[in-house]
Image (cartoon, rainbow, N blue to C red):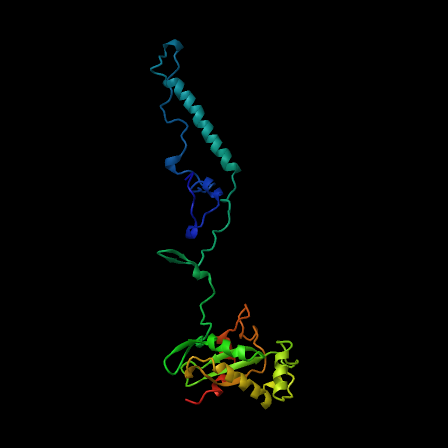
Length: 279
């Protein structure tokens, strides 16, 4: 066993200290088996020592060997008795073995995905419509259309386009405010400029989303964005302004502040469905 690494459960190494222990620990207080009873002397009784020691030849040293062997056997016996008197009555407890890890073994090795949290369908099978499938059979990335909207509407912080496998495309808009976390605060400078252009009295994002004049200004921006469309099927024909900003808490944003399209769709599904004709 020396020089080899002992292996424990699941191939995990056991502390090297265990390598120095015997493979089995016999019960300390148990008597040796009958076949293992210590024998002082298994030799025959010693022959009488001759009166003339010189008569003992080196070829027959049985008397001398018997005496030496007897002393050695007795020494071993009393040494064992002394050890039994000093050893503890129980085998030392070196602690329980580590609990086995619940890992999946594969032909390629350990599947560390087993350490992850239980699998869940995070999107709940909602199509985030990152790729829009248009009525004419074409597919187009949603961000291409959204980019055109943001360029044409500087007062908008987020534009999320939906309409995959629908007869038309529609967009959700989030208006900028002086503090994007509070729609009740004044509009951004871009929003105030648009309101002034269209004689809107709206000064906050929450008021602007319901103001007809402000919405006319938004329609003009949509007209400019649609001029960049690659095909009639790429035109955005409807929109709705959300009542507040997108937040990480509501699942509408990812930790890196990018838009979580599945979260937006789940959160505002009713508003989205109202923009499309009933099936």
